[in-house]
Image 1 (cartoon, rainbow, N blue to C red):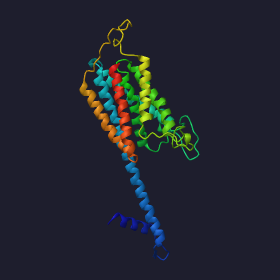
Image 2 (tube, rainbow, N blue to C red):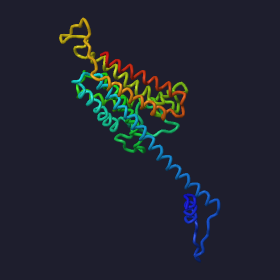
Image 3 (cartoon, helix red, strand yellow):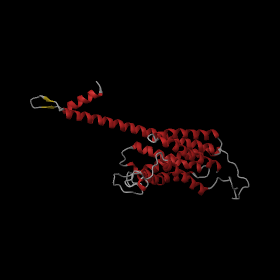
Length: 305
């Protein structure tokens, strides 16, 4: 028996009534059709929700796989004696980002209820510790982006930052800095959001795949950290702080790891940007190339410093 026959029989049994004398009265055709239609709609809604959940989990896995690419690039660009330290920092990114984004980060980014009359706010004010969050898969998807933004800085701070300070940075970025940017652009209550009831200049800002929210946030943080920390010890100055006549070369110990990291990240870009921008294919090539150029710039920056 097909699912259609089962639905028909279920609705018929549910809507049939039995009178006092034991006779059964069948429902009218309109009532029966309404029941069947509602049953099909419920099934379709359940299927759609399952597909959406699978898509978010799949996309989150792809985005989180970029952690591997960052780790390989950073490990390949540093000297051999600092590989373990660099890899541990990449692991701390995920740990610190998960703590910050789980406790308050997600609430600051997407917390609250929204409708057509929602006013513009600086940050969200609810859903702390994921209380009241309806979709855990959506949180996981957003967390993967948050961790990616945090790990962009790992290569910039290679061989020049203590572990405790780096963990504190990861938590701070995931708990406040990144969520503020996300709320401004991706939340319905953000002042730059295209989803705002009154978008900026009538259109707001549209960021399909996080080229600004994720990569610019991480890139600017990396730039500020570089300016604060300066180059690696012995690179341009000697141990007494005097300028070297010729900068000392600190070549990365493994070109293979560098290429592996870049290649793995390119794979992620092709898949994740293709899925996110499926309805905007004419922007796919443009966004992918822009993001790849940013990564190449950051990689060169690490090698040069």
